[in-house]
Length: 162
Image (cartoon, rainbow, N blue to C red; front, side):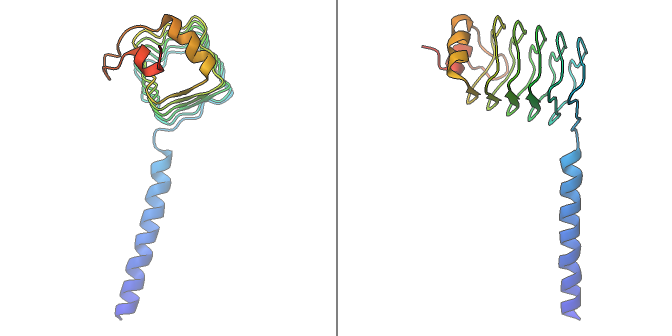
C-alpha cells in the first residue's frame, strides 16, 4: 500500500512540475516576428520575453517598456524611441538602432552583437555587462554621457570608455 501511495505521490509531483513549467514558459511572451510595426506605440507595456525577429519597427515607441529577456534579431529600429526601456538580458543581434532614442535605457547583461547605433542618443543608458562589438563601443564612447536614473551607473563607465 505504501509503495502505491508513494508512486502516486511521485507521479503526481512530476505531472505538476512539468505542467506548471510549460505554462510558465508561455506567460508574457508575444511573437512579433516578421511583422511591420512601423510607428507602433508599445510605450509602458510589459513585453518580457517577447520576440521581434526581422520586425520592421522604424519610429516605434517603446518608451518605458519592459523588454527584459526579449529577442530582437535582424530588426530595424531606425529612429525608434526606447527612452527608459528595460532591455536587461535581451538579445539584440543584428539590429539597426540608428538615430534611436536610447536615453536612460537599461541594457544590463544584454547581447548587442552586430548591431548598429549610428547617431543614437545613449545619454544615461546603462550597458553594464552587455556584450557589444568593440567598434560600436568606440563609436558610442564618443557621445556617451549621463547617469542612468534607475541603476545609478554612468553610461561611460558601463561602456568601459577611457
